Length: 328
Image (cartoon, rainbow, N blue to C red):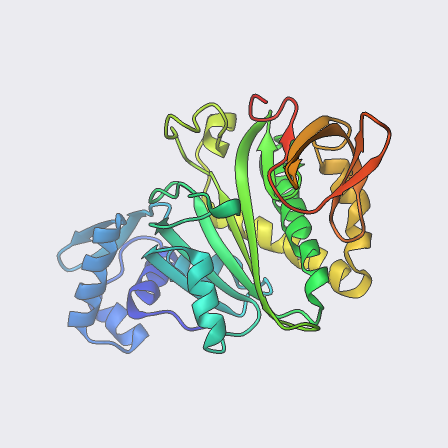
């Protein structure tokens, strides 16, 4: 992983110290000037860190806000498969940044995280609400040895990883709405957007974007009845680094299965977690309105729907409404 900047080094030193730490000691330990120490302390305070200072004693850390800083991420993710971290205060979308960096040669395992997205996006070109400081907006860059047809499996993998991580951390009954939403009690908690660059028979890179509503207290009126957050469901705040870490650990385990055995290896677990299976669904396809019962998932990640006339339809794209989810 990339090294920490001065501000992050100062924060770590304060976190590891009981009591006060003088500017002189910080300067000596970190090999920086006293002026650099003071500048770092000022920056940390601007970020929301509560730091007490006493003449002749130094600085003492009293509290840290829930920020996705490079230091917090390095400490929380140091034993995961992440190879590089890009933590941003604001970006158009983490998926866009991941794609830009992928084209510049960023390695597999690069993680892009932002406090706020100004152009967050979901499937079918929809905007994804990404206010500052409330959610986990991140993208993971992968460079799998795969053909384009196999990449759908990574969307299923990400949904399974999110659902598992939420259940492990909170005990909530997180389930998957095919193909890319994670829901709790019929409301959307997380959206997933997978994008790739590929040629006919090989994949250059895949970007898996994940947006989890962590500490969101309210939503825009148009989605208020359909969306939820960990805070609203549990009544308590959650540290976003903790949520991210659990997601990455689950992803790491599932990636091993996917790389060695393919999407089919994930289907039993995915199907068990998929709230779409067994429900009435409807969608538009080729100018037709289709409705029927969702019966399963194919080895390539498509939804199998049994229509009223008994025929079996395979759905691989488009908007699918599911009875009992999002008030539908």
